[in-house]
Image (cartoon, rainbow, N blue to C red; front, side, top):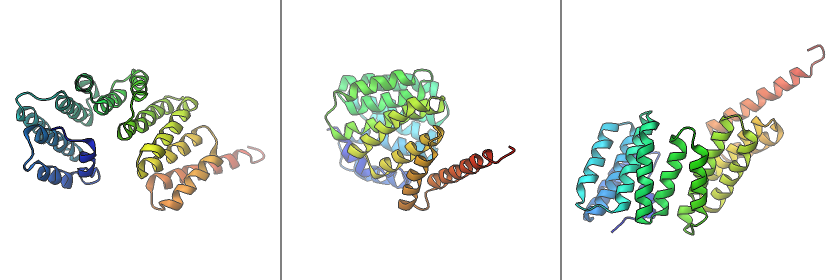
Length: 252
């Protein structure tokens, strides 16, 4: 029986992939072959986060061999994790066909969640086609009703926003940062909401709206005083203010 994403979420701790591997191993005890294979794909992902790519690939081979007739969803997970490994190794071009395969398997298996995962990875890995893959993801989101699946709106909008921002199009990026935050507020996690607000503040700085940016970052600093990214952004805003004042000095 397929394992739900909610079950996987409960086992994952992305800040501690080693402990996550242990939890997945424990969850495999007494599970059927399909479930063991799905859990093994997540063990592979955790090994990838640790940086042990050989071990991760070996785990995915185990997952492939676990079931005689794997489901489309299992095949999608295997392709997804192999693709993520290639991205982590700095080979995004090698990941694109794997993510494309994952999207096809997910569609055949009727999993919108996995299909959106594949699309969001394609939007990250397929250079020059970021906006096309994001648009396909947004189109699919329009047919989704499950709140956990709708959370993909956070990543899709955020990733596209950063692509536009870093491509010199901050005005086009801002609406996507705002939509990422709106999705995080409705479907996302506390961290996603915090990051969403930070990203809007960062884009405001690029747009020269430094007073608004500072207000956001100061609010975030009050919540998490030791957040490195917030402190760096406040320092950058302080430097920008100093530069502006210097520019107003007579004779300069």
